[in-house]
Image (cartoon, rainbow, N blue to C red; front, top):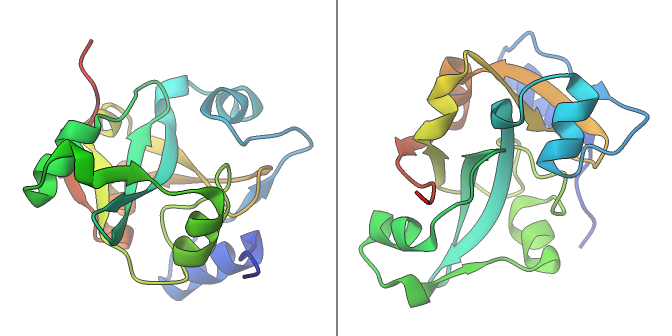
Length: 160
């Protein structure tokens, strides 16, 4: 299955009436640290979009770049055991979201997916999300991210 592109992300942003432009970089933005370096922002303000399966259901988890997601907390969102939660493979991510890891955006997915947003992102007014390729990002206010994705804000990060 062919992955979607930053043009698809831009089309999704435009369809929502958001005056947000996808930005392309000469360097990789595939990891949270690379994205923070490219944008010149704090690691925590990077939105990492991760595709998980809870049982057979794919979901997108939006986490802060400086946090690790807790699979037990993800499981609890659906009232299942941690053993029912697994990270999607790259091929599964492309199949269900339309995008490969390192470029999964928080919106504009191939299929309508439940979205969970880690509450650690509330530390930032503006966050930066992947835009469909390992060199594409877009800025978005946290409030607009929640509204545009319809995501549920929850405590999902691991506490060390």
